[in-house]
View 1 (cartoon, rainbow, N blue to C red):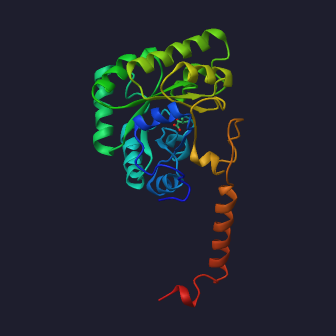
View 2 (view 1 turned 45 degrees about the horizontal axis):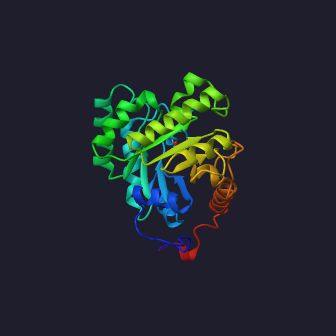
View 3 (view 1 turned 180 degrees about the vertical axis):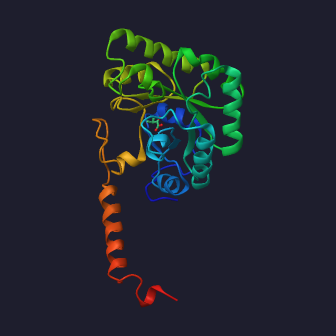
Length: 273
Ligand code: KIV
């Protein structure tokens, strides 16, 4: 097991995340979309790995998360699950797979769980998707909610700016968070909202609130791995802390390889049969 895991090396469960909140132990969550990255992220000791629909941006180069399909999310999630020993694996239900009606939502949710062997699903939205949330939970599938900036609704809002700055939007977010908890969600992601609101929601709920740009007084943090590893140099939101500069590391390594091939330094005597 990884040298970075300080405490419990057992597989993380939804129940354990709720216990962590009770004990005041912060939850660390990151994204992964493939086997190799998932193995590394898991070995680093994160508690939750999110197979985010941000794969649409990071892996496929789309401008938004909307184009990624159910089949593509299933492919990513299967690859991630194969690489993970400890972390809880949560899969984003992609845009269009849970908004039409609850029957379609539960059918798609069951398909993800059956084909990927992931541990839980994440859905964006509050009251408006509650029938789908209830039906999926009734099928025995754990759900993580997602409120605040919900990238699947980008065309409705037209901007990725900070959400719930005004009183009315903040009240709706608190109400939605309560509804999701009452429905049975095990956790909620809050994206890009004022830190004071993040703290308030966290104190009002018994389930863990995991923030991305929601301040330090929530119960855990999530970032997109490619962003925190410095692979996406053009993406510079205030909430992002970079822990590496992999863009330079990778392009330097590739530049060196190209130089060695061109100069016939690679392969040398020892690197051939
Ligand atoms: O898809 C994703 O990566 C996410 C995180 C930003 C929370 O939903």
